[in-house]
Image 1 (cartoon, one colour):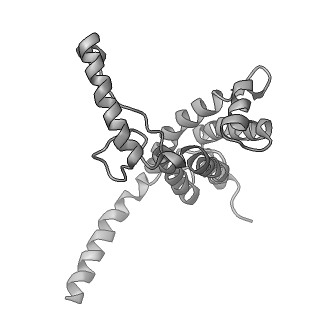
Image 2 (cartoon, rainbow, N blue to C red; image 1 turned 90 degrees about the vertical axis):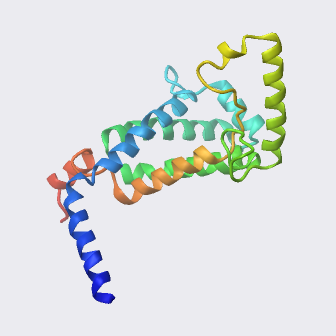
Image 3 (cartoon, rainbow, N blue to C red; image 1 turned 120 degrees about the vertical axis):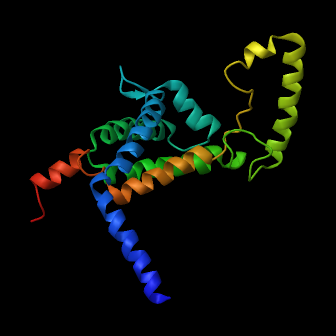
Length: 204
C-alpha cells in the first residue's frame, strides 16, 4: 500500500514539475484582476489636480464611517489603492505593496461592510444569508411586482436579473485572499519587474 501511494506521489510530482515554467501565470492573472479594482477605487477618492482626497470622500470617512482624522485616512486609503494598482501593473514591489493593500481591505471589510454580513449581492438561497438578506428578498419581489405592472420589465432585465446590493464583506475578503497569495508568491516569473530586477541584482 505504501509503495503504491509512493508511486502515486512520485508520478504526480514528476508531472506537475513540468508546469514550473508556467508558475508566473497565476500571479500575473491575480495582478491583472486586481489592477482595475484598486485603480477605480483609488481614483474615485483622489482628485489628481490637487493630489488630495475629494471633499465628499473626506466627509464620508469622517461622517458616515466615523473615522478619526478623515482627511488623512482618505488620503492614505486613496493613494494606497492608486499606487497599488500601478505597482501591480508593473509587477514592482508586489510583496511590499500587498501589505498596505491587505490592511486597506481589512479596514473596508470590518469598518464599512461588516454590519451587512458576508454577501455582496443579496441572495436568500446562498450560504451565510442573514436577516438583512431575507428582508432584501421581500423588497426585491415587491420591486419586481411594481416594475412588471408599471414598467417594461422584460427590457429592464434584458441584460441580467434584478438584484439588491447587500454590500457585505465578500468582495473585500476575496481581494484580501488574492493579495495574501501575491504576498507569498510575488509578481511571478518572467512577467514582473521584481523577477528581472532580482536577476540583475542577486543576493549579496
